[in-house]
Image 1 (cartoon, rainbow, N blue to C red):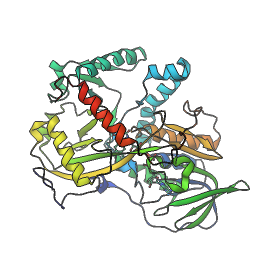
Image 2: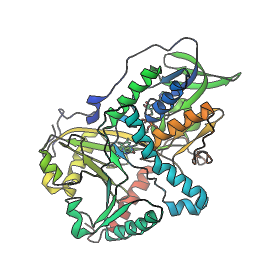
Image 3: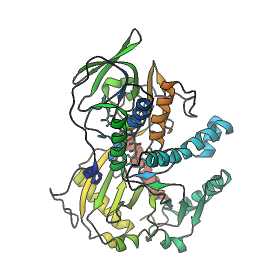
Image 4: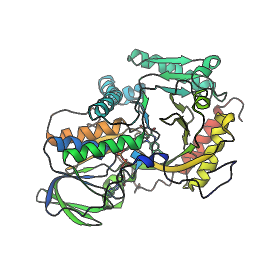
Length: 434
Ligand SMILES: Cc1cc2nc3c(=O)[nH]c(=O)nc-3n(C[C@H](O)[C@H](O)[C@H](O)COP(=O)(O)OP(=O)(O)OC[C@H]3O[C@@H](n4cnc5c(N)ncnc54)[C@H](O)[C@@H]3O)c2cc1C
């Protein structure tokens, strides 16, 4: 356990959620061909596999690590249908009609997720807790208020909270008020993932883990995947690798920008003490460009606190030290509590800050969650399956193929520079410049 800012080897360097993870068993590759090979076993891959298998398609999920090795068992478990790009920006770029379709499809991914959880009886502690966006500067409060008017016009329920009333939502003096969105929730990410794995198994999906796809080629209408365990043939392929897209999938790798995000979990604390800090148990995100995001664990006994604490790779012991200080900045009363878990994971950004789904040379893909993929990437997986099944449903996101920029090979060398610039802008926005 990490106490008083010291470091200790006893701290777990795996996600707090992993106690509930279904890692899968090591299996050989099947001989012969499969109808569909899904690369990646996160929410996207599993939701695609589940729908396909239930429609009678033979599906093989191929995973480089253990099941759910990527973001899907590492995330904060905050469920919302928001995008990084605001509705007015979408209107400016794509026109009102398409902007509305994109916006509402993202919003409705929350309903998709809720239905999926309830129909499959997935025990993942999901609740519509709501989300509180905490304003890091007075100017940010004004921005939130302006957005609230726009959201109101779109029928999305929000409520501004002045600094004087903030303690009802968030017992911290760091912020200048904020905005509540009730159409948002929280879940236990690994239990949600394990529930999807179970549903997939019951539907007949096969899994092969520790089996990185190293190359892929298409001949005579069939794909051959070269993997760490040999080759496998498939009629169709789904790429669901998000921020972990690697060398064997170079066309896709050139289109995603992986960025590390870090989280800590505190030791078990008195639930009453924690509820006094976040009385409504809402999911919290602040408005800094280099944001903090935090919540109570689903059992209400720990603070789960995350942030982009470094834009260069650092050890999770160092990120624990930094995040613990950040947590104390938000909640001085937690300055002395211990940290039991510290971990990291990659989120995938894109060059237009939107998530994408589509197909390239016959390979179906959904990539680029931009940090918010629990609901949306689950929905995208389901959409990819619909596409393969030829259901004729069309996602509003599908018109816009994922793009890259000249010279980018998948190594985001520029992120530390942008990160430091954002840190400077955040500092400028603070009135006290502390
Ligand atoms: C620290 C952190 C916090 C986050 N918090 C939130 C949050 O609170 N709310 C929210 O909505 N979103 C959050 N996200 C984002 C969310 O986790 C992702 O959007 C979501 O998990 C993406 O799911 P996925 O299935 O597309 O990708 P992943 O779950 O990342 O799965 C991709 C898989 O592909 C595998 N893979 C990669 N290459 C290959 C290959 N060549 N061969 C075989 N397998 C391969 C990887 O091993 C990995 O398991 C967070 C992410 C992180 C990292």
